[in-house]
Amino acid sequence: MSWFNESWRPEINWHTSAGQVLDKLVNSLPASRPWRIIVFGSSPLQLAVDPTFLSADVVIIAQEDVESFCRAAGLLKGQADLYIEPCTVVAFTASADWMERACETQRKHVTFILPHPIDILVAKIKRLDEKDLRAFHLVRDKLGHPSEEELIKALRRVVDIYRPSFDEESGNNARENTELLWRNLFGKTINVAQEIIAPALAERRKNYGQQNQGFREALAHYGKS
Image: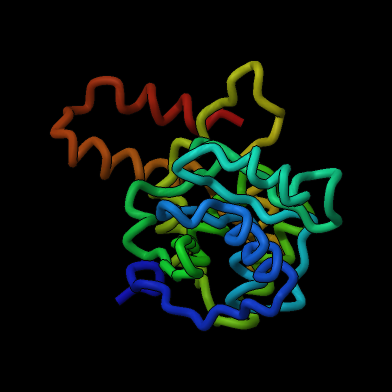
């Protein structure tokens, strides 16, 4: 079974700086009802892979607005050195089945959901700054994954990141970032159009029962430099 088809059941280190901030968040949320909060970005790697992998923020997605509770507890940006960054669900780029791999862990009345490392890493492709590159190396060094084949399969599942950005979005280029990542992580080049985009679109076409109409045009659109 492929690594990213397995559920992630790590040992969570709540003594890390991210863990302590999340415990402060737990204490700030009303205990009169349960809460479900997704933790993504670099914090899950600190919590479950390497406690020395630091970040300036703990990025979360909650089912309800938690900003007022965070502000009252002094946990927002500008209030704490390590702060909570509440986001909406669209901030996390992941495949449709990412929840099947995720780890759920309970802290009092709050359930935290930590995405699998492959989903955390894939979500970093569109930005891919120096810290994001370190995250890829960290996971490879500590867990022995992802392999080149695993990462290709994971990127095929989020092929839409290779679409041209909207005008309002930053100029980050997922294709160029993927090529940079391959040189940095695997020491080789990759043809994104042939190895990721084309197979993903072919599988999508097969699943949707489509014929060849528009397929070549779509592939050409994805494969533009």
